Every structure is written in structure tokens, then in C-alpha cells.
Image (cartoon, rainbow, N blue to C red; front, side):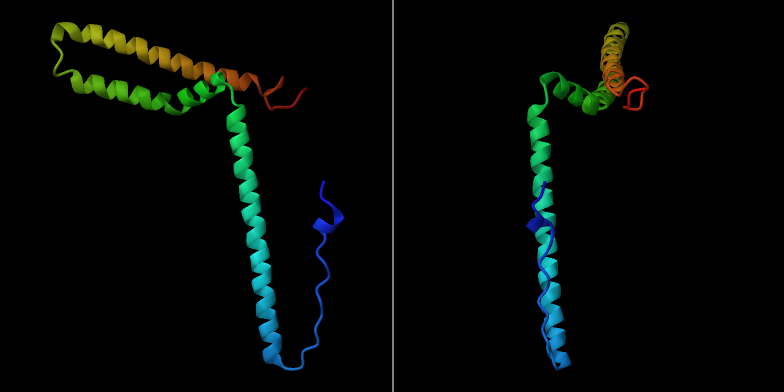
Length: 135
């Protein structure tokens, strides 16, 4: 909770200015100060957000990290496996293509089931009625 002095800015000092050039200069200075304060607040907020993200990364368990990695890179692995198989078909003897395709099918099935389990585990954590709230 912020202190009252941090949430309320002090009342701006009022100056009596008799010519318009001085008034314009004063407004420019005030605008620059306001922009500098805004940039400082934005910078502080961004630093706090980065710190919070780093905290979350440090608190992540190995299982969560592995699940995240598979969820992000699993489709890429599937794509690489299929592309490698299609590229290597011309170099594999015809009698061995069925063996390689069976192994590839096993790998794709395994990675697909891992992705499916990650999705189903993530959905189970939402709550009893599926939207994150209890009934």
C-alpha cells in the first residue's frame, strides 16, 4: 500500500507572469518535467514487470519447464521429423522405408500424446466448471 505522500502530487506553485513569452517558456518547462516524470514511471513499471517475470521463471518446476518446452517446440520437432523422412525417402532402400516410417509414426504418436497431455493438464487446473472459478 502506498503512502499518502506518494499517491498525491504536491500542488503546483503558481507564478504570476506578465508577458506571454515567459508564460510559454514556463509551460514548455512544465511539459518537459511532466514528460520526464511519465518516462520515469514507465521505466520503473517495466523494471518491476521484468523482475516479476524473472521471479516466475525461477519458481517454475522442472516438470513445468519441460512441459512448456514441449508445448512450444513440439510442433517444430514434428515438422522436422516429417521433413527429414520425406527428404530421406530417396536415399533409403525400398525394403527399409516401411521400418523407418513405422519408427517415425511411433515418434510422432509419442510427441503428439505428450502435447495432448500438456493441454489436458492445463485444462484441469482451471477449476471445477472450466472457467477458473468454483461453482
